[in-house]
Length: 267
Image (cartoon, rainbow, N blue to C red):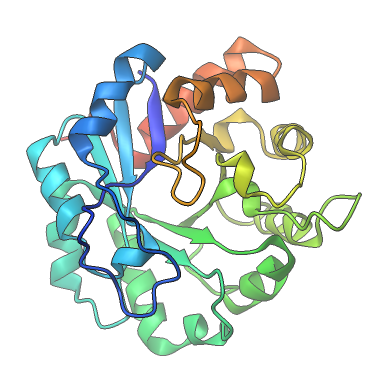
């Protein structure tokens, strides 16, 4: 089993969320993604709701329903989502909720009672909270989220987007590692082109040393929205080979950890 834990699907016509920072002018279908798997050796995948589709998870949910053995999903919701909706989506293969906080000025709302209720239900379902946030803001975010249920795992997108302005470990990365002492935290080694110049190999080595391979995940970030030009799907997996030194680490990252986190093979 090799699991790609981060890919997106969408149509060229949306429906796009109001105020979206980016609207693609092309289609990325689940069939196109699956057609790329054999050349890279990928066998299973996780669809992550892209921010420009907002809370309309219909395309993702349809893909999960059509391929329950191969796919899992991470949705985007607002705090009005009901327990019944989350339970229904769990049965389809959803295993997490994503907060894309790039450009979101007020992080304090995620410490409010409505979100706390959602997080509590997620913990009961065995889901995780996936977060994309600039590294320099992670300390503030984790302070807001300090009283999340301890069983609710955190999955950090794209290396935690470390602050490239520091030659030492980003303060946000330090905050992530501190949080990992008291709760399950996983890091996605993905999308090095989104790191604003930070060194992915440096941070991959740091996370491997501090958290161990059982807390790391790999994702292709297909179809590389806003960074599409010249990319080859299999090269995304080859990049992981370059960041890590031992095959046993890769085997855990590509199979054992995502199998456990996303429940592949569990009916």
